Length: 583
Image (tube, helix red, strand yellow):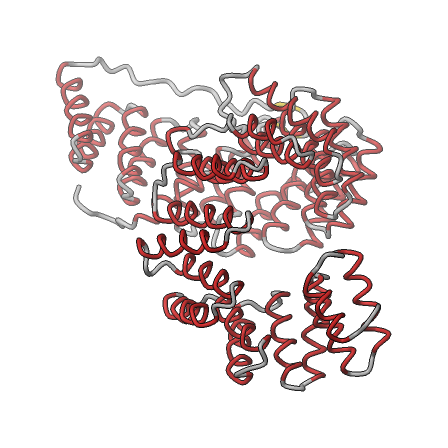
């Protein structure tokens, strides 16, 4: 048939997506399962002759060999000859797989002609109508379907129409068509529910809430209605609405789950925990609720409870070998809990259970880095380094991480020279790796090797001109030593442009402004940095600025707060000694 119509790959996909969306419209409305099947279409009484069999087989062989056109033409012809909807459907599938919208639509028209009761054929056809923005045809089809359908089917059909129209380019026009389709059913809660969903889709939240409220006035247990109200409301208002709904409908699981999720977003973790505990009681086999409870108890700093739920989660997974579920996150969390109580052996045992899945588990490599740090925490530095040697990197990024991890282990163990040697070896293998160069620069700075630090950071900036950390580190090194302040200011300003509201960059910005005696600008930057992150290092700088400006009581208060949070902070001790201050 050649390249008739359009051969746009996006058009066929768009139509297919629209059809699939319509086909997946809820078959359950407010807890009542609706049978969406229509009377089956009769197949034609055509004998499968040798000729027909030969044509179908050769078409399939041609398609397997990459000739979609030959296969499509043959099957389309056979469909016309036999009036068999199955053959027309197969022709449509071949055209869709080849992303040929024109040919697909022709075959779908044929399929629908031969199987007028086929919901699937109709939905694929309507998918193409959405693609072509033929809203009038969609209106015509659904108007007729609603007229002839069993009233029990109306809710499903209305939601199908809404879901399909939601994919139209012109959302307002699509909503107008939906209103026209539903106008004969103004007193139907199902119609108001579809209108509520449609209004939300086009961004009219006020209309969405009002339509959904009409549904709730007559069907007080409609979960779809209250969930629509929640979607179209602020989180605070949604939480209030769902609280009232659950008081009347305590078994509404979907609403309780949505409510619990909103509580997490609102940082109301105690309330969220109670809701998930209720969900878990109502359905003990709900592993998602079990895992979420583990996370919530971790966030609430109740490790024993968290551990209980994570272990329960893993046991449930073991009892369901057929489920494709990855236990990695639970194992990592259990290792973290064990590590925090300094049970490093237990932590290792949990992490050792993380499988690589032939390289498909992207978390596996990071887990191995965690295991190396655990060995080091046990005082087994040599074992940690040896363990790293057993981990095979699959790409350059992982090789970089191996080098960085070993260097960090050595640095933490008080062996900076060896750490520096490891980084230098890594840089020899990857001379243009900005991450290794940056780490080397930071280690050189800690060892007062300022020349090496500056050389490395300038190379990082050359290789990665959007690396805010490199600009900030170089600028701060100048500001802290009170040299080349104009250049320092330029570097830090560049870092701030690349990452606005980064508290550490704002701290550097405030510090260089302080060195330049621009105290108002310095205070603005340092207060913003401290607001974003009340860190002891930032507190030191803000306190010294305020002390210099004569605000000594405020400075002492900030330093006292810093001492409570980090009493061993060396920068704080040095600053207080230098200024001869006892906060």
